[in-house]
Length: 182
Image (cartoon, rainbow, N blue to C red; front, side, top):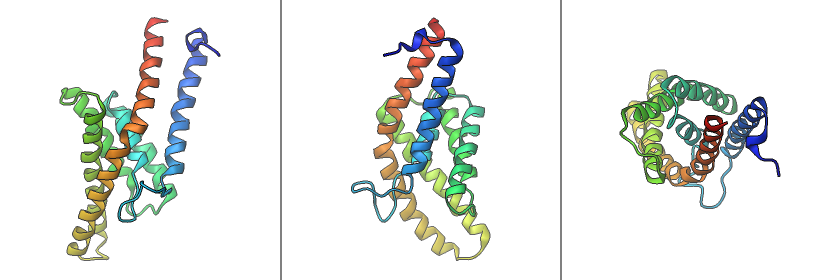
């Protein structure tokens, strides 16, 4: 077994980026998956949103926005780009990073689950607002669907958030500790 702290600086950086990118790829691949216990009203957890929250909790607003932009473009590439998920995930990254700055939130499972719940509602609201701008459906239809989608997605995403957040958080903290003590 290789000790990470013994790797050269660039080796550690490449390993860290590799783990980070691999986690995004895994989230993108399981996003359309509907396993038993991972579905409510035909919806599953929003894994890319959970990843953006996990990333943004300990990052700057700019880093949260960039993560939201990148993962939003990935999700738009996997689904219809109309409405765009980019705007909603950027809002999630920015708002989550803002919580860190203002020290409203402690970083534990319950706090992260609550943040994911709230950010899922925010993201779904941004999507619903984009749908309302197209004018293809009435506002009443959009609002009725939005309530069901937002609540179902928020419940599932917040329940599954610790499964993604915990290992990523442990990894990033370990890498940060190694870099600070190297």
